[in-house]
Length: 376
Image (cartoon, rainbow, N blue to C red; front, side, top):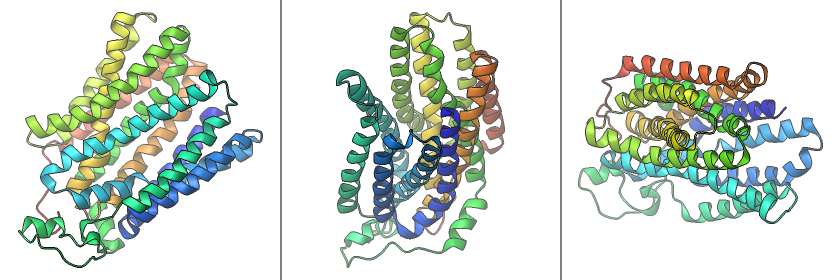
C-alpha cells in the first residue's frame, strides 16, 4: 500500500511538473510557489486523519504531489532571471542543496516528534505543514521574479552595459508557443529528460527502499547508513557542477555520463560487500549518494537554465523533471515488488542496468554546448 501511495504522489508530481513548468514562465515563482506551499501545508494538516481511510490518503497525497510540483521549475526560472550565464553553474548547484537539506530536516523533525518527544506520529505531518504555511508568507514577501520588477536592468541589459535604474516592470512572458518550442526543439533538454528518467529510477529506488533493505542488518547500521547517503548527496550537488565548470569547459553532458556509469559500477560493488561491513559499506554508500545527486543537480537546474534561456527555463525544467518523476513512479512500485518477491538483489540489478543505460544513451549528446541566443 505504501508503495502505491508513493507512486500516486510521483505520478501527480510528474503531471504537475509538465503543467506547472509551462505556467511558471507566465505566472512567476513569487505567486506560484507561495500558492503551492499554502495548499500543501493544508494537505499535510489533514494527512494525520487521512490514514484512517486509505482512499482519502491516496487522494490527498496525490494532490500534495501536484501542489508541491509548483515549486521547483518556477524557482529555477527565477534563478535564471537573476544570474548571468557565467554564474549559473555555481548558483544552480547551491539551489540544488535545498531539496537535500529539506529532506534531512524533515527526517530530523519526524525523529524528534516520534522518538525524542514521543508525540503521536500525526504531528510529523502537522509540524511541517505549519512551517510551510509561514514559509509561504515569507517567500511571497521577500522574493521577486526578476530584476526588472525592482527597477533593475535585465541580465541582457546589464551584459550590454546598461546599468541605470528605471521603473519597475513585469518579467515579459513570450507565449506558450515560444516556451514549448524551446523545450521540444532543444536536443539537450530532451536528452536530459531521458537521463533524469533513468536517474530517478535509481535515486528514488534507493531513497524509498534502501532504509528498508539495510534495517534488516540491525538498527544501528540502518541509522548510520541512512545518514551517510544524504551526506554524500549534499557533496554531490556541489562537486558535480564544479567539475563541469573547472575541467571540461562547462560541458554538462560528459560529466553526467561519467557519473551515471560510475554510479552503475559503484552499485554493483555495494552488492558484493558483507551486510555488516561498516569499514567499506559507509564510504561506498557516501559515494553512491555523490554519484546520484551530482548529475541530478546538473539535469534539473543547470541544463534548463543554460540551454532554454531564462524565458523558457521553467518549462524546460518542468519537462525534464516531469519525465524524471515518471521514472520515480515506476521505481516506487517495481522496486518494492522486486524486493518483496525476489529480494533486494533484484532491485539492485534493476538500478545498475538503468544507470548504465542512461549513461550510454547520453553519450550521443556528448559535445553539446549552449548556443548564443537573443535571451540569456
